[in-house]
Length: 73
Image (cartoon, rainbow, N blue to C red; front, side, top):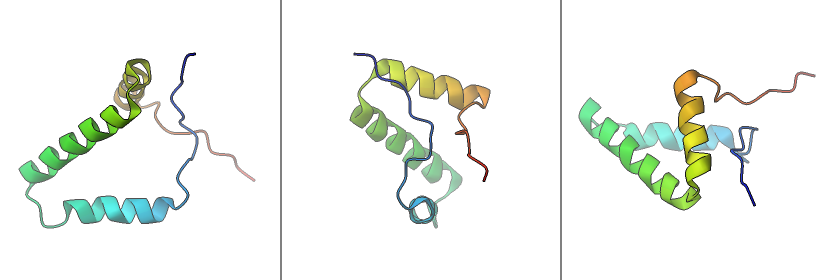
């Protein structure tokens, strides 16, 4: 079974997540902030555990195609 990267909105409370992400960086130096980002990426990559999905995520992050398609009403 092949798994694909889900780029559709998938967070129940995205604003709360964003606030937590900002709080994680509060009062950190640039170097500390970069280090904590790296640690977070590695923790999430381990949780995902699928190298194909991770490679797709890296490709999309680098080429700018990571944004989900938004439905407009």
